[in-house]
Amino acid sequence: MTSKTPNSYLNENVKDNILQLFLYKTAFPFALMFRSLKFTPNNVTLLSFLICLVSNLFLLNGHSELFLVFWYLSHFLDYVDGTLARITDNKTKILLRVDHLSDLIKIQTTIICFCIHYNSLFVWLIFSTFNIIFWFSELLSQQHLYILKSHVDKPVKHVKPMLSNKILRNIYVVFFTFNGHSLFLLGIGLINPSLFMGLLIYYGVLLLKRLYLPIFYLTTNLRE
Image 1 (cartoon, one colour):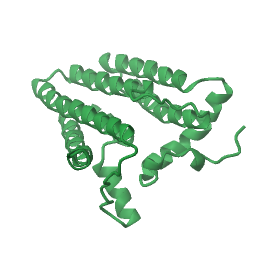
Image 2 (cartoon, helix red, strand yellow):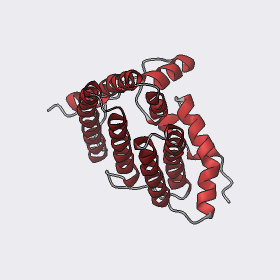
Image 3 (cartoon, rainbow, N blue to C red):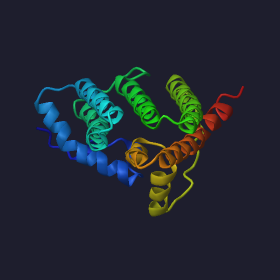
């Protein structure tokens, strides 16, 4: 059993996000449990993926409560597999990670199932717009990550934090950035189609804002 604390395995990117911090610390004992059961991080990712598919089936069949139980369990396991990877030093070195690809598929299938559940023209139109923004943001972010890894010897211009106050920074990160914690809001989309469309619009705005950093980097650090 490891003698290190949960903080020893935290990703540096979550330390200014109180919700992400809580979720990763909560995931720590479950990661230890899966390690004792000889699960690999990819095993946990596969389990999360299968549970998500089950949740989608419940959504399509009108079992909202069961959908929520299985969806949130699946999403929580996304924090467990990353924590387990850091505990076992089994972090993927390639750009397209299995867990990341699984997350993309889960997000897409779940939102599509919501659209099927409501079966409204306006819902599909909002989803189509969100989807364009989502994939554009994802592709550009991956390009940004690839270039960072390919030019580690070059000086990199970083964007300075907008807020120095820790409380304000946490509020900003929690409510105005798109990350794993944002997907916990997906459950409110079950209340009615208007809230679901509002949620997609909210996600779309956050994704548009997320494009700033890769665009800033790509237009400043790579300029000849």
